Length: 368
Image (cartoon, rainbow, N blue to C red):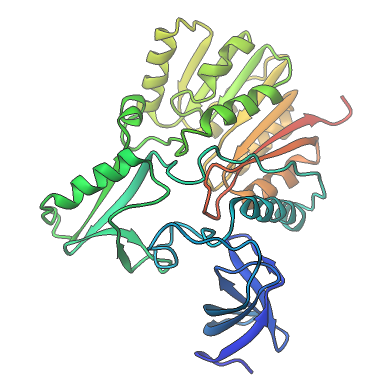
């Protein structure tokens, strides 16, 4: 029987969604990070659960040929990256398999997944960082979300973001008036500052943004109306307005709506209607126009049940679903697959070196 702090040797048979390797010891599944399939490792048990155990990596006894030298000196301490120990093509292979496995396991969908579109910049791509100050230390959190790792530079952040981080580190930070000995800072590029209000959602990888927009544009079928749910400040709506007669953008964040409206006016786009409100509330009072496509780009939690119910009831001609969470994507696709056929699944690596993956899916009605 496994015990905490016990050292074990095992072979890694897979890399699970989230980035941890999967092995077995005495018929119990053991998860260990920073490994690759086929490696033999020495690990130390850290947690024992009912059906599995977790371990920390001590030594690679039989290394993978796909190993790479991590660029970041904080790798394995900071929780921001999970895959710097592997070459970039291997990271893409792992993510494609994880996506396919997740769609099958959660969604019951055995469908083709296209190769992951790589990021032009595997490093130095992030246009923002969330930095935390606690008791005089400034940094990023470890995996336990409690331990703060003091970082001087983030290798996946853009140079401008790192310059701003260096400037922040030189500042004297005093505790807030609330009395809490903790503050959070969002460091963003100047370009992002111009585009969006401070707490609005933004894609973090500028080099992948045009690729993502083009992917959605390529998937978009002829339509008169595009409903852009969770539209933000118009990341998709502004670019796709020329492809349809009308765009309806829905976003709960009113300041983002205002930014989108101003940008549409600047571009002389008169066919975009902006509606501030939750997607479920706005859709409930929105009749489906003929020849309509629904574009979904929800947060990590996926779509709320009323949104799924609306889609199944009104059945727009096409649904394009953009997701940053394969698990909730699989859950929602399972429900939508009763009326829609998943036509294409296009994964995009918006987050190199990390466990995260963006996915764009096209769904069309069955028996059209």
